Length: 256
Image (cartoon, rainbow, N blue to C red):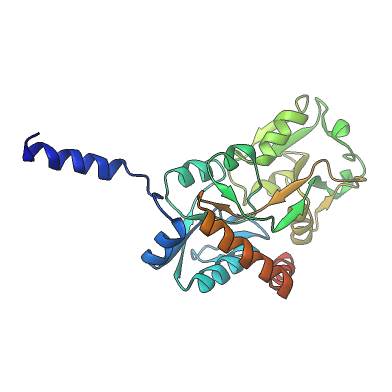
């Protein structure tokens, strides 16, 4: 092989090398920056303010994790529809912000130990809180369900509420206004979001269900790197034991 042929082949091999060849933990430390992908539209876990800054329980936890790693923190905006493609494309290192453990996500990365265990419940106008008390009561042709695209809420609606009128609303920050304005009747989402949005909007109430419709675990989506997963799991365990995790969530639940 001629020397002039070797260089292009080496360049191709370099470009084809996955971004996480080797240790993701080592790469983050070498870069000196932890890139956290977050949607910024899921209170009380993550919220992007008009000035571009973030707040929420997992935003606080991201700050703690970056401090633990002794690196700077960078938030990378993503959406529920693009969260997984952006992760696969290595646009960020870790997904945080109320991320549910789903099979398609677990196939592409590793999840930390859960930081929250929840379940799907309905939120509606307070006048309807005794109406939507079961999946069967919601799964009716005259019921207008609204959900955000590309995550566990849409998947639940399509699997369990096939007889209802389903609208996919692209902006999770304004989705609850659809119910308040009477353009939709109900949204089924994680119980912690139901309680927080009912706290924010006096027009909305959690429907009076006997138990959540499902069980959902939330965790942090990580690259497939045993060293990073072990580091993050150990750190989460300490944050739980110290009360930091519970405190961050409790504070965020009562923020406007």
